[in-house]
Length: 115
Image (cartoon, rainbow, N blue to C red):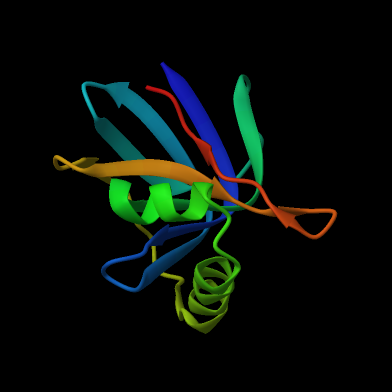
């Protein structure tokens, strides 16, 4: 079992964002999301955001298409974070994946999260 935490978790297609979220990977493309209330042992902190997006968009991000990277950056900033309590399990559909979105020294660094 793997756990990741980030300031933001974004469903890019649905324009939803959750703030201070833990993503618990259950395997077989299933994840559970819940709020980060305290530090949890063996949880990897991800700077920036964790994105749920399709593989086509991820491939474009890997090619460092600056216009697309800036669009994602603006999209995250424009989301209205959902503040209510939440805890749910989600199964990634075919063609969906989790990756990180952060900038390091001005460069976009895409990184898929492993299951």
